[in-house]
Image 1 (cartoon, rainbow, N blue to C red):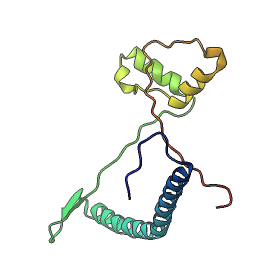
Image 2: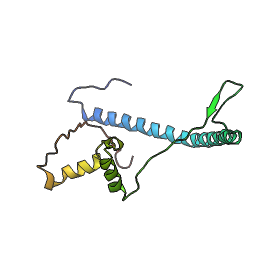
Image 3: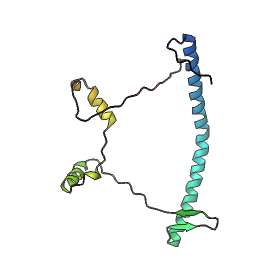
Image 4: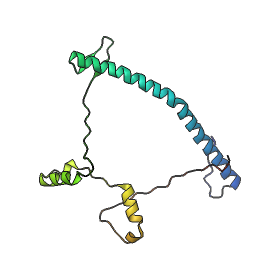
Length: 147
């Protein structure tokens, strides 16, 4: 594809042309993803069946890993996801505070809640200590109606 002119005074016809190209590329990406989605789901289902058979073998043999004659190794492991149920956060925070365990709490902000808070007119003069923001522009293109 030809290089896009970086000048500020691109003609209206050229802008329309660039948007048309953008929309065609986006549509082709969507078409390709959709076309392969069904095949990917079929393959994932087959892979899950094979994984289940291998896992059942480990369980029946009482082993955690197996090296095959073909040189492959398969193994089973425990994946644990920790979470705090809704309404129990106060208990968790209290436990962490009482036992000096701040490392059990992840340090991050809620971007959505912060944006809503800061965009509220009642908070227009609020300055939150240590809060920084990094913004960048993204470009979106909408198709013309009826196309």
